[in-house]
Length: 446
Image (cartoon, rainbow, N blue to C red; front, side):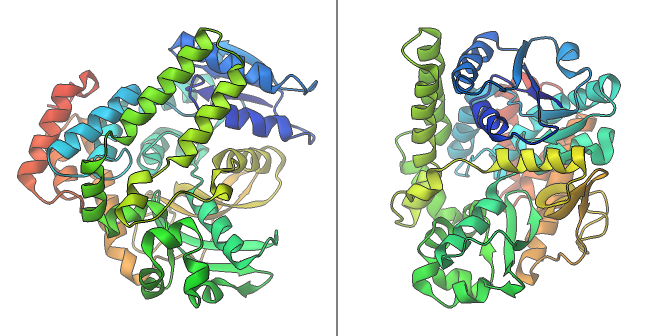
């Protein structure tokens, strides 16, 4: 199989390649094309991959591409992992948000909407090029905000674009670990939107083990989400929330922690990644060692202000192990390419599965994947307490897509003003004006 990675100079590409190196089954990926417009970043990641492949005589061939047509033509699968505006854009979003007393995180609230408004036009253009150059290819979208971007791309690619995220499977893995369960026979009942969903049942060998977890404070608060939300709140919900719901349930505390922080998450990562890419370019030792060091630091500081906002300590060691979205991606490719039926939580068009949303709304639900793609499993439903939030969030997503497609400032203001993390129409207007003034990519809004 031939795999193309759009955004091939991205920091997380070695995670994907390491998963490919571990895959020795028939029909594996034999060629990886890395496409990026930033040649120095592309060269740096290529050096990391070369070191990863040293002890693997059957390692997939790596091709570096700066021409999109060359990268895409003939591909079986395409990973889309682009960041319009770079890490500098993330930092700018965070600063603009905090300057207006709102959270600026890159996938929720103002930051998510601003990021989406920059990304959707580029994502649609990529979808159109893929449709023309590789109409039989499957696009697996990593680009954030994953749900919005996947829905925008689905207008061109239909069901041949599938969004993935490792948050739901990571939540399930941590919950099972708290119970001391390592069974491979697990069904995760999860429903919502990307970064806005709930795990409602965890079925192991026919038994829902979630009630066992909910009954014990010590077990609930032994893993990341349990400590973030607290056992009393999780038990009040009767479900395990996705970690990103912390921005909604503890918005005041998180915002204050962000305001007190010495620097924003985007600022921290900007400096850290610059150090990595510069170090590789200067030949400061092993590129792989530099990347591993940067990755470990990135994982240990993940959602640090969220943890500080509720007095939670450092992350557990098991949460620092890779094996999230890249494993989902490999399983997804294998299931499609070889009709190896797999049950995965994916971002796909709803098709009537969640009764509160229309058929074309991209949702995050369990799916059965085979040669014909991903089919949402009937029976998924939103928890009663989450219906209003999801319906509202989907309307905000739709307004954001409308703004990007129709170049409408009005739709952009509507998206911001109606988001629950932004409490003022006046603030929404000011946020959008600041974003337009800060990002040349938003000049299309009028």
